[in-house]
Length: 319
Image (cartoon, rainbow, N blue to C red; front, side, top):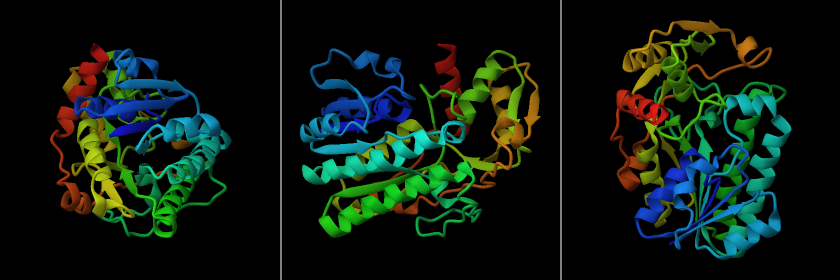
């Protein structure tokens, strides 16, 4: 495989690059470093089987050159994180919609197979137990910037599916549920690295909302393993797969567990959504994935529980 990873200097993308290189593949990373970090891939520079291209997926000519030289595309480039979406909605929409359109156009042009990273945000305010890939989307007003990310990723999914159905593009869609691990930062609203950073400094852990919202977290290594398997599975083309953890935890309980795992003297401070993000902000109260489809397709499973995930982030930040 010679794989292009868009957004490959990001948290998940850099771990994917490590995995592909370890498996003997060649990797090209395209990233504008808007949210990705040079430090994530610095250890790979100079390898004959690795290439870093500084640039945006919105640059059609540059993207064309990258895709033309690869047989597989992992499309991870996106404006991510609730905080970034709320603060820069127009830039986020341009990246998440127009950028993806260009990636699909080039993948079809060169007949490269493609895996597209979508999100659990797709489900919106649907609080069903163990959300399945075919469950309904329940979203708030389109005038609330909170939901623009969900809308944009839904368009990405429609494009991926339609290119497969109409044009035969070998595309796979994955919906990621709160992926966590080393190299992830808390700058864009990612909760575990933010909590760990605060705990290691003995600062108050800031819980947004009332802390009752429920989430499931999954280790990045388990996610990356599934991505590499799914793109290699012919039966996965034209399908969508949930990828996430199974242990449900409230954000308040999560804060308490981070304090316990770090031995911190931190307290917990609750911050209303209006203060943390914007007036009228709406959140998803519960996000629990059904991953049976991925388990059946590529034997997807978790190898690290929540305490192990927290410990991996603590070790990374201390280092």
